[in-house]
Amino acid sequence: MSNTPAENPPAIPLLTSIAPVAAGTGAWLVDIWGVMHNGVVPFYDACKACQSFRDSGGIVVLVSNSPRPNDSVAAQLDAIGVPRTCWDAIVTSGDVARTLIAQYRGRPVLHIGPQRDLPTLAGLDLQLVDAAAAEAIVCTGLYDDETETPADYADLLAHSHTRGLTMVCANPDLRVERGGRMIYCAGAVARAYEDIGGRVDYAGKPYLPIYDLTFATLEKLKPGSSDRAALLAIGDGIGTDIAGAANAGIRAVFIASGVHVEGALDEAAIVRLFPAGAGRPVAAMAKLAP
Image (cartoon, rainbow, N blue to C red; front, side, top):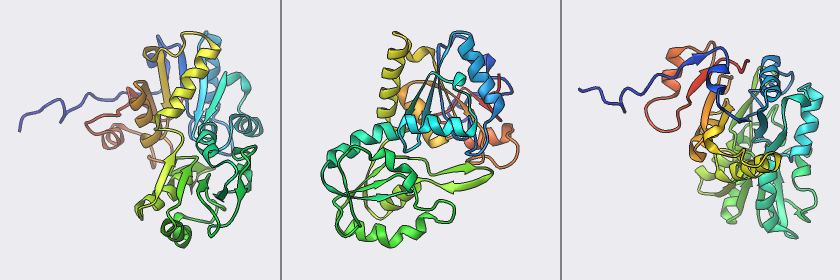
């Protein structure tokens, strides 16, 4: 069999410093959970890399699939210890989700998710009801992501599907790593709903609306800064950060986390994670570092 470019794609370099791919970039689109922190403690090298890039004149927009609005995420970063000197702005899936949820203004809606995500629904004049009375579902996560899995929602989802309810998924992530443990996110519940034929409207990465909002945010920070040729996306989610960057026409760097990598990141793991085809990053790193 002949070796074709499709069969043997270019090797993805494994870097220890972001510097080689940062040259010539004007703005970074950086994922938060898995790159900047693990839900419990900050990643200091990542913070230093972002701060150094800003000190050199670059712009850092944190682009997160958090189901909460950006101000709520900023407060969470403060609590974890990620310095505000690391970033210029935050864009979240929750920001985008609010535009999708707003179509149900004044109507009865079932909220699937923890109480801490209620800021996503604030001011939208929703009637929060149980599944029997709902006209739609808003899923921001699991009620208790420390103990539950999507299987715990099988009966609720089946009932909702029989009633033809549309779900708005405010966080397309399937799982994230929290303090060394993997926990399920709203995307896993949404996928379970799709698997039985339910309709889901997604906010966040890899879907383009969150990138459109990010580009608009960049333009407010500095006109002309949304030039895609000068942007670099940095994230740990293959189906979200890396695929989303490819959809938006942006180069991306993959950061290893427990979501996709168990143990050390090496060349064999990179080949396994990124076979020939679209959506491949320009580099991979065990962690974001200057």
